[in-house]
Image (cartoon, rainbow, N blue to C red; front, top):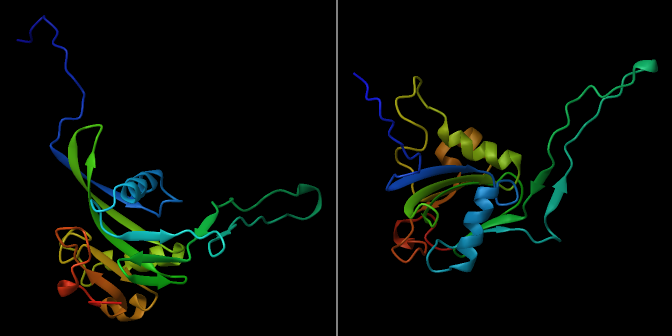
Length: 195
């Protein structure tokens, strides 16, 4: 029978480690922004990854389109969409990937000070919305039904693609590789080995 005494249970987080999936670059996602702020202030503890936000090169495209009706019933027929930040490029180590349609997938280990635990972040981003769609192409199954979770098998620490991934699959990978123990790019197991 249930006890008449009530026991108080704590709902605090108690896992020894956890993982996060972050979609969008630092100007699109607050969690990604916080991660990259830590990466910029604690260099040497994180891989050398940078999103180029040069104000002269970065643009903000307003994607809101409004359809106006005719006569006295003028009203907005289109749902407004969020503004899209378009990056000038993404840098990994000495490699620069510039232009629209560039997508990137990054595994970045981190330490959560609040919960005193380690975590693994999967960052999925693009220089624009097309770049995000291009990197997500790697998550699609090649032979349905999909027998594994996306990005769970045979994915290195980072992958960079462009629009050619839509027609060429893995042939559209611009760069891929692993981080070394000091968080630099491990050139001996990365493609291309140098830029």
